[in-house]
Image (cartoon, rainbow, N blue to C red; front, side, top):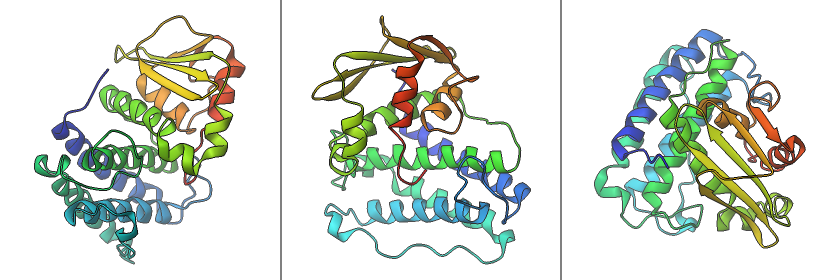
Length: 260
């Protein structure tokens, strides 16, 4: 399974934030976001910059108690010409906060899984930046540009979130919907030598890296798989399906994040 090094993840956050700024400038502040239709480009930029600054503060202050999470959000500049600088600064702040020394320090982990808080937040910020960067690209009618290793790492992060204690606690409807009686699904990247195997058990869905015989297999470039799983692209036409397509679609229909 591909695991991005911290340096690679930090570099990707900065690079994809820059691409997002370029796409947002091309689309314009009032442009609709076709892959997140409840948002405009302005709201998209605000969300990403605020998230990066918010996470940076959590790590900088070594917050361990969720009751102490930051209550105030960074303010988006009024002039869109100032957005690239604002985004660049927010990206740099969060990657500086996610230093090697901070990654294993005591910090709140919102997933409640085995990761340290710093490593959880590094993956989460990368996910927010890359997926919403695609949203900005879609608003600007630009093609997606997500490197296979980054996409593969974010697919793993996606499955970690869907099978985390926090998902069961706060998204119980979704967690219950993806329970099953042994149905199996897998997602297989064609450009990253990666696979993700899912079993829907009565006590909850589980996943592990690798491939094996499954009831349905969805194959495609890691970028396409990530965008399908995050509901940015439809399954039809973007992933090759071998087996029970309805099973794959059922999974997708019941694993949407609240804010996407």
